[in-house]
Image (tube, rainbow, N blue to C red; front, side, top):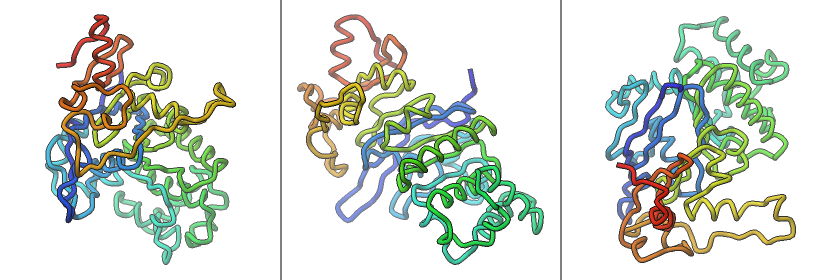
Length: 334
């Protein structure tokens, strides 16, 4: 079994706003094994991106990690000084954002920006840094890399810019790559190419990937393990097979019912009723309770514990717990 390179333990991240404190991440736990792909899915506002930004410690000024641990190779990086975190970003863990046009500086050439990342985290300088930049562009499938390094971001297509961002993220050979909605701004053909590229590079370089997305189709293709988030909490986690073929949480089931499926041609999609939770006014119990057709009285009053199902994945849902405990099929996690 692969060793965990990253472990997030009881993570709480909040933002101070004019209307009060927003608890965007509320007690998240997960492990990332070396060389594996972890998918984090959920609606907008579920806390998935804030979880990623908490790992990188690139939160907005009004945001902060309130409690919990983020262990990288056994060390709690929440205790690290800023200088050590700067070395961590890029050298140990890199991130790709969803819109490469806003991530790349429009007034500098692609080559300058790639070489700057290389100089910052490695000993390469001058021509050696330029050679490394060209090598990375070749690795991610950019044609005519010697020409591209002298071009500006606006001269490249969206797919090409995203490849540049991936090259920049991988230039220092990090152990972990975080991809935050990396294909959202791209058309479906380019999306497929980018996902295929990431899978190929992951296998070639042996790095671990955290894929943050609202697109279940993307996760189905790539992830070894999937975390489903809602209202800043983890609803369910398990393998791709667990989540897609044996979903247990009512929210996970709702997500799967709301996406197109070739097996349901001619049937209407079933959207999840209601609106996403207001993080300023969280219910005492389960965050999904106000939108759940299977909600019970206990769902309003108590946060469900996380339990392990017979097939091994973890779920936090009173409706499922009641059914399975009655049947003697699951045990409550300690």
